[in-house]
Amino acid sequence: MFNAASVAYLWTNEDNHKTGSQGFYVEVYSDKVLIRGRDFKTGTWVDAAQYEVAYPAVNVY
Image (tube, rainbow, N blue to C red; front, top):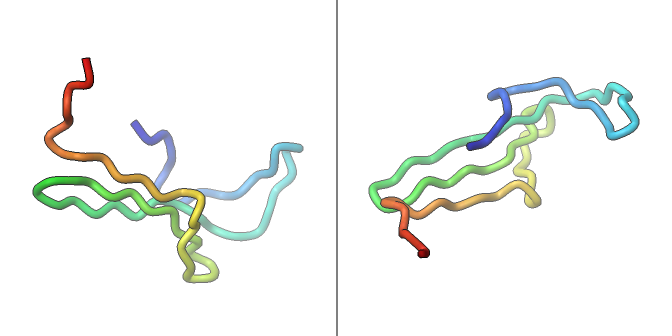
């Protein structure tokens, strides 16, 4: 589960508003789902927010 809106206002850990707009870009393929963080104001990817989920999920137990 990714708990975020598609686009959101930015806030710091000190509860200060920050100018910008960030969210997730989701790509769905037959064998995986890619979730990529995107800074919509600057038009750049957020390298620290890149996730890949294999599909179908593999049971690790």
